Image (cartoon, rainbow, N blue to C red; front, top):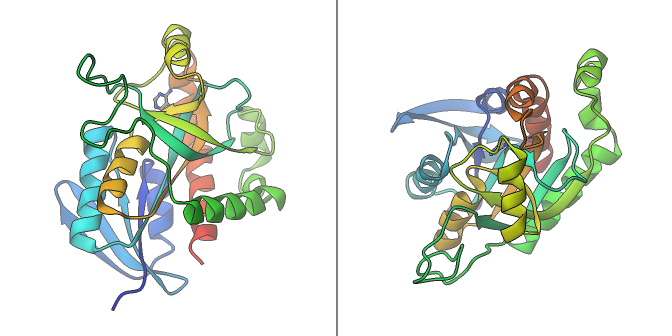
Length: 252
Ligand code: ADE
């Protein structure tokens, strides 16, 4: 019997390529426009795949991981736009709750309520949260993430040693790129730290299939008028490297 098989779902193709480079006994399966890479990291079985972007795409990918690959745990990493102004580019957010900010079946249900589950927020199991907080906390305390980035790039992005923050992440099929949308979101969901396009959908599928999961995000932009410029460059040069280091630390 398989005791553990970890699904590693990433929203950055560059990061997925880096994680695939860590695999022993690598094999590939192509299905539904996705390439699933199986193998081991530190003797633990893993399946690595690019989630693709948005709620539908990522929910489909995680469902395939659960149903076809029998994963027992799920780790999701990617980037996010900062909503809370205490976050800087490069900081790491671990979700202790997730909400779909674009889910609105009023007046039949409350705003943001997930149909049939009767819940607005989903939370990962404590053991996954504790593992992620300890592992990423150690990476930051030991200054590991910054040593991966050349000083020229640290200056280009005004990168400081990242902070780790645990809190609420909002997901939806929307890229936030102006302050008006950002402030409107805060009016209805005042506790949101950052926004992205997959996490809460992945959390819903994992909840429904009873798969322990964790959602981790690196802040790539401020979800405002500068976000497009920051986002692309940051993902390629910084976030994908942080993502690989985080996965490496979590799988041991
Ligand atoms: N992922 C990274 N930055 C984002 C933003 N500004 N909006 C939505 N998803 C994102």
